[in-house]
Structures are given as structure tokens and as C-alpha cells.
Image (cartoon, rainbow, N blue to C red; front, side, top):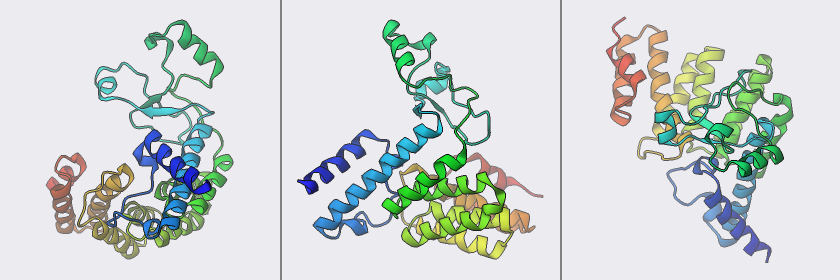
Length: 275
């Protein structure tokens, strides 16, 4: 019965939550949890709990208010309020609230009722709960599922955001994620970025970024965390070369990145840069 509940729970969470909340993709379609039936069930359960914690942590951070990606129509026509941060805690890219604003809610009275019985605020220029309140949740979700890449990525950012002196702890958190998900692209890209920007250990930064490119050499991820990680690995390698005055290498990395992401404006700019 417990096993059945775990399977059903995993299936429901994967259907009900956005795919970016799931475990990062790897070259292996079957993860370590899928090698045996019982391990597969436990893996689904752990992944489901981590995904649930991820979603609830996001809601808690925003005072209980749920955000969602904007539709293409909303982005094109500006029919929804774009979420923006007043405290610098989060970057919101094309996100809006799940509960619509009064002026664009066709439900009239029922919409007013929902806004009064559920957490609701205008998502423009809003504030978040203190970072120290949500940090333990990122630690807990990565304990539950050590392969939950988004927990490591955002958790490290939260550790560093709370106090810039916490850089060693943030790096240790990412390194733990790299050990548990050695085929992840995004984690190695983030390690490379941290060492490029914060420690200025350029050789170590290059080593991590090259590992990210290597991990993404034979596949194009659809998971947005891993896909963005691959794109940024090429960007940071090019920017690292620029920072060191190696313009030829900068254009080489920009060119290589454009073979994978031909529409990226940043790589195109770096490719054409001459000084």
C-alpha cells in the first residue's frame, strides 16, 4: 500500500507541477533510482517530496502567493502584471500571479472572493520573506533528494545573498550537488561562475565551465535549469577569455556557443567584439 501511494504521489506531482521543478535531466534516461523496482519507487517518492518542498518554498518566500510563467499572449500584449522585486531577493523573468488582478479577472464576484480568502497581492514591486527563514528548506529538499539540482542552485544563491562572507558555504553546497549529480550541466556552470566572479580563481573557473560543456556535449536539455546552464557555460567561458585579454579565445567560445544557441544575442555580441 505504501509503495502504491508513493508511485501515485510521484505521478501526480510530475503531472501537476512544472517540469522545471523535477530532477535535472542527465544523459542517462534512467537515474540511479530506476535500477531496481524498490529503488525506483523510493526515488519517485524522494523526488516528489523535493518537488513539493520546492513549490511550497517558493510560495512561502512570496508570502504564500503563487507565481506562474506568463503565457506568450500575455507577454506580447501586456495583459498581465509582470512580477518584480522591490528588495533584490529574486529576479522574476516573465512571471505573474496565479490569481489574476481585478481589472483582468472575468470572474467578477468569484474573483473578489478568491482574492479575499487566499494570499494575494499586486506582484509588481513586491517584497519577500527574509532569506534566513527559507534557507533550511533548501537544505532539507537536498537531503530528501540529493539529485535535486534546483535546490542546490537556488540554495547556494540564498546562502550567499544572506551574507557575502558565506561564500565558502555556498561553494561547499554547490560542490555537494556536483558530487551527487556529476552529469548536471547547471551545477558545474554555477561553480565556474562563482570562481570567476567571486574568488577570481580563473583556472578553476575554466575547469568547471569546461566540465559543464562536456556534460552537455551530446544532448540538448529541455529542462530550463540545465538548458540555461549550457548556454551560460559558453557565455562565461567567452567572458573569462575577455577578462584575461584573450580576444581570440573569446570569439572561439562565442562561435561554439552559437552553434548550439544560434539566436543568443550575448554570444553574437561577443563573437563580433574586436576590443
